[in-house]
Image (cartoon, rainbow, N blue to C red; front, side):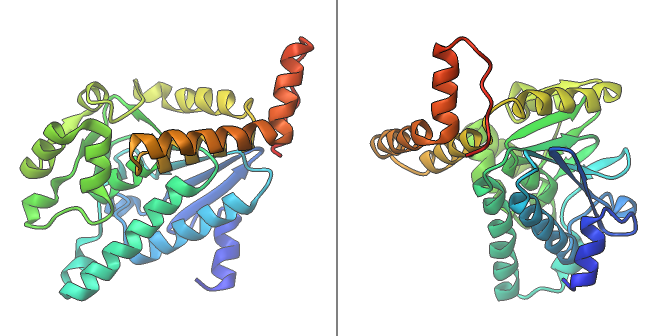
Length: 272
C-alpha cells in the first residue's frame, strides 16, 4: 500500500475501502464496501492488515473493534470475481495469505471485538472467528456457504469453526452450507452475546469499558496462553500456562495488582 493511501486510511478517510478511526483507547476498523456487502478483496485485506499493525504499534490503543459499513452486512464473504481468476497454486497462496492475516489477529496482544450486524458469511465469518469476542445484533446471519459454490473455506474456517463449536456441528454447517440465525449462533457458542440492533453499540461499549480497566500486558499474555495452548497437548499447554503465569507475575502491572489488593486500594496499571 502506498504511504499516502496508508496515511489517509489511518486518519479515517471515508472514501477508503477500510475506515480506520481512533477514539481514546479504542481503534475501530470498518470494512467499507457497503455496495458489495463488505466482501473481501485483496485491497481490503491489505488495508485491514496495515490498520491492525498500526493499532498494535500504538501504545495508546487498548482494544480494537472490527465491523462492517451499512446495516446489511458485517461481511458477506470473499469477492468471488477475484477467486474465479485464480489457478490452483494462486488460490493456495491466496488462502495462505488470508490465513496469515487471521492468525495475526489471534497473535495480536490486544483484544479484538467483532461487532456484527447483518450477514456474517464465508470469509466474513472467518474474520469474526479470528476475533476474541463476537457481539451480534439479533438480525445477524452466520454461515460458511462455500460448499454451495463447490469450494471450501480458505481463511481458517474449517479449523476455527471446528474448535469453536465442535466437529459434529461444524461438519453440518460446512457440508450443508446452511445459514443460521444469531440465536442459533449463540446456542452453538459461536458468538458471545446477541442483542437487539438498537442496543449493539451499547453492548460493544460495555465490553470495551470492562476490558480497558484491565492490565493491557496481562490481557496480551492471557490471549497468548489460550490461543497457543489450544495447539498443544494438555501436558504441553499446562506447562506453557505456567510459563505465562510466571511472566504475568513478573510484570510491573502484576506486581502492582498484587500490591494493590493487599493494600486495599485501586490498582494503577501502566501496561508494562
